[in-house]
Structure formats: C-alpha cells, structure tokens
Image (cartoon, rainbow, N blue to C red; front, side, top):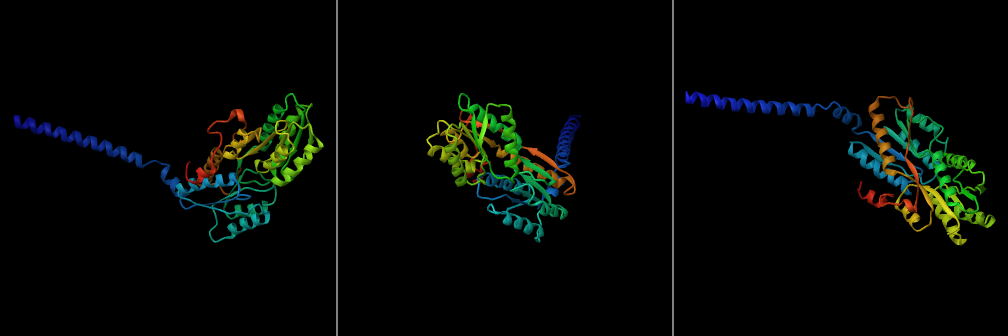
Length: 343
C-alpha cells in the first residue's frame, strides 16, 4: 500500500508538471499569433522611401533625413535622399529620375519650393503607384499626405511675439518675407497681417523679400532701418536668412531697440541666438514630433491598400513662439548628436 501511495504521488507531480508546460506552450502560441506583426512586417519589408528636400545643406532637412533613415531602416525599408541644392530645375530632374528609374520608390517625400512647380510630376508619380508625402511646404496638389507647419498660425504666433516685444515702443514693424511663390511665405504673411488687424495702432512700415538669402536679408533690413529708424520689431520669415537681418540690426546699433522674431528648425543655433539676444523669439519646428508624424503616415500608407492619389491627409506640427525666458535644456535639438545616432 505504501508503494502504491508513492507511485500515485509521483503520478500527480508529473501530471502537474505536464499541465504547467501545456499552459506555458499555449501562452507562447498566443504570443506568436499577434495578428499585426506579420502583415506589418510583410507590408513594409524592402519598401523604398526617397526624400527630396529643397536642399540637404540646412539643419531641418538633415534632421528629417536622420530621423527617417533611423526609422525606415529599422522597419526593414530602404531610405535614400537627393540634394537639388536650392535649384528648382535640379529638384524637378531629381523627381523625374526617381520616378522613371528602374527601382521606383514606394514613397516620395517632397519639400516643394512653391505651390505649383511639381504638380504634373507628382501626379505622374501617383499614377506609377508611388505615394507622395509633402513636408513643410504645402502645394496646390492633392498629395497623399502633408506633414508640416500650419504657416498661417505660425505667422500669427510671430506677430503676437512682435506685438509683445513692442510694448511701450513705436508700434512700427518691418517684415522680411521669403518670396512671392513659396506657400510658407505667403501663408506666414497672411497670418501676421491677421493678428495686426487686431492691433490697429501697429503699422508695417516695410515688407521686402529676401529670397531666403541672408545677404539679401541684411541689405533690405539695413535699408529698412535707415528709412524707418523707429522700428521696434522685425519679423524675418526664416532663421537661415534672419542671420542677415540680425547683422543689419547690430550694424545699426539697434540691438536693444529692435526685437528680431523669426521661425526655424529649433536646432541648437536657435537656442544660442535666443540666449545671446540675437533673436527675441523663434517659432520652432518640433523636429522629433514632425519626423515621427512622417514615419507614421508612411507606414500607414504602405499598409493601407489605398491607391496613391485617391486620398489626402493633413498632419500639422505643434508649434509655439519661444523666447529666452522659455528656454529649457530640451528646447532645441542637436544635429551632430542626431547624426551620431542619439535618438
């Protein structure tokens, strides 16, 4: 009887172990049967994403490229860039080359210089089965997605910062616009003027174009300050050429009188310019969030089954005007760190 009881006890232990093992195996099966992982990987594996900005030689484009390369290659895709170097014809040729090449991209990410130039080319890309994602600058073209700034609201933020900077001063504001064809310049101007309508005591005394060139910005700002010595704020439409406006303000000895407001990518140069008083306020692009939005919409399109050219999605980036008083250690991002892989 004693032997029987021992054998019965051993049998119970073995059955218990078998039950535990069975439960564990079932749990493992549930883990490997995630309904999303396999189709996600199959939809994205080997897909080619090509970024063609206006140029690769400025911080925002290099920041986008660093983030997208990191994301795309980690989900199994192929990432490439082309550099038109601010040349519209070279930009159009780069788009033409990738559309007509033997290895067509699955997604084309375009930073357009204006509202209309590439409409026919991008329509052709969609007919070839390529998704088109516009970034930063919107176009008069139904892309599959737009990711970037709401430039009208961005202009409003700049104007509000300039109005605040001019409290107790002359109420004279100067504008240094980009150009007459770029959506970011046109919409930015409209947003600024909308806010200034609510402040009828303010007057825009000059509004020249810089064509996004710092030397031109410096020259037109110099003239502006000579003709309107009581200006209390200048809004330059891009931090890249606002370096020219800041030099003109410094040359005129008006650093303490004229507040310089601009917009930019939020790289460390912007924070340094706020810290040393070169800029009064910068409406910064939240690069990490904007790049994450690009990656998310690319992954969505590649899984969606939606035919290119049949739907449009807009994703606007969260932005705010940052002044020296708002600066935090995390206010700006560092390009060298990103390129070294610090995500």
